[in-house]
Length: 141
Figure 1 (tube, rainbow, N blue to C red):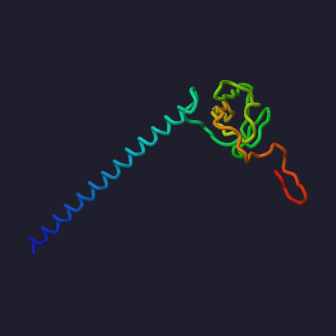
Figure 2: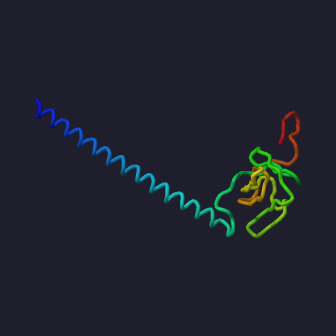
Figure 3: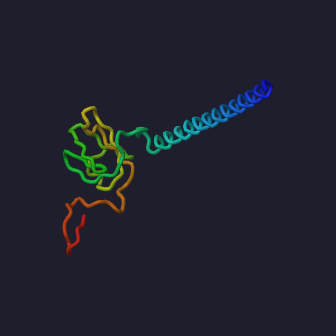
């Protein structure tokens, strides 16, 4: 009985080592994939336009805009006198950013917008700057 018990224990130890090795290989493969995939995404975004940041504090679509505020993805952000607007061709004004444009924002510590970066043109399904109104009994945006 002692010999049979020792054989079973050795088999269990062997099986546990195989499981541990398999899990380590899977975990190592996952980390290598995540590292390679993440590096590719940074290179892709950094190469989007020269001088653009790799990461933004906020990315989204402009819902509406004004002189002192910008609404992106239904969140309002305060614009300051020092807010800089960037397009692929250089620094521009807020007029170069129509409603529906895809943008990236860099925020200051007080949550004011430091800079706005144009990431994509206005979409065909952009929202109107006019407030919602009723036409023939149907609400329009």
